Image (cartoon, rainbow, N blue to C red):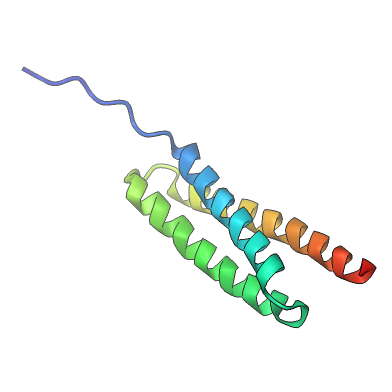
Length: 95
């Protein structure tokens, strides 16, 4: 007898996981790193986010839409980290 096909995992969850990690990483860099070192550490964090994006989508195990999912998670994380870094930059100007 044939077994019914299992429903594939939701691919958008992997994108949200990457965005959540990018949010936490950028907040952590903004809080714990001195102002003059924030930009280099944000770049290091973004490099880790890119690697995490590839790892999550490879773990997902589907080839269809791989580039779209990796691109969406990476660009979304870049925009999120950019907005948060602008917020920390404006806060540094005020203080």
